[in-house]
Image (cartoon, rainbow, N blue to C red):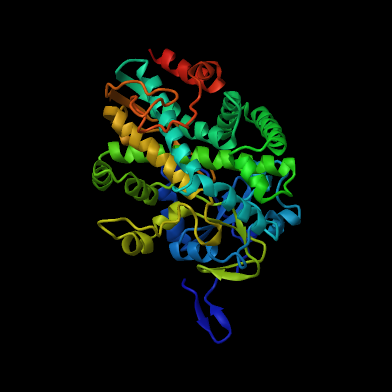
Length: 472
């Protein structure tokens, strides 16, 4: 049933309240294994917007590309901020709702209201030195990412020049965590303990809760250090741009940076590798031509890491799709479903030479991901180093048997088993020497690279080394 406008407003709309629609559960086994089929089934039944059950809480899931843009680009009509959630205000959201903790942390991607604009402005200012390619910090960061990537690849090579590896556990997940430690300015290898706790939090295992407590404590301690002794790092820049942040508020933003630059970037790297190795012609062709970012752009249209954005809420009763969304209803935009919308697949993304930038992987409108350039750079360097350092890579499992993990927000691989053959190459120096030394053209002299002995003592490095030894 399509809504259309008459003299009195939209007609043909379904005015049934969300609570009365008996929405079907979204996070099922089918969603874990073949989410595209779930989106298509919902689209066939409901159209561009569907009522779903998120672990016991009803919500609207936006499936249509045009409708997703409407929501993402209209902050006034579809604001963020849990204070806008009617069911929560009325006490109808269970206190033990599994998604509650991740949404209660009132950081920049969750926050609504008047506090958001100065916070986002501060984020943009704090990230600019790392995202502007003309800035020395951006150049140092890119060089550091290259070194971290080579460290991880060389560690894989300790098991032999050929063999089996899990590129998810041994490369695509630890690389962005190491980069995050660089951004946060952790002293020495201290940050690696926090990074391992972030890993545990993202895995949502039985030790996730104590890991989160330790992580937040470590970030609060780091925030206190940066308040007293600022450095050339993200927390110091954020404090300079927003001096009114309390230590607790700063710790929450640092937690957001960790999550933003870890899970999203790691999934993007793995998904790009899978697309290339599984024989997708256009991706492989663009990568072999040196167009790593173009390859990643094609990947995020097919397999975006962030499949569902954090909720927005209807500011007033508003028609969307064939339903009336009541004021205060939660609305979750699904970028993965929007990319599968025929409007997007057949018309928006129909370029055969250079793929469209109209995808929703980073959001749309004024609240696009503030770290999208940073994340893209890290992922591009990581993917580039993989295909330069490995003479041969092939999937160790059929592509349809790769183990995926889905959450309400992200979709990525649990593991990425590959057979590899390394290109023999000299080890890159830990600190670049004179211009004539090997690797000096790739690692600027001023770049400080972690001490290998500190790496061996860190939790992260011990874990990665253990993966190598257990695989022998």
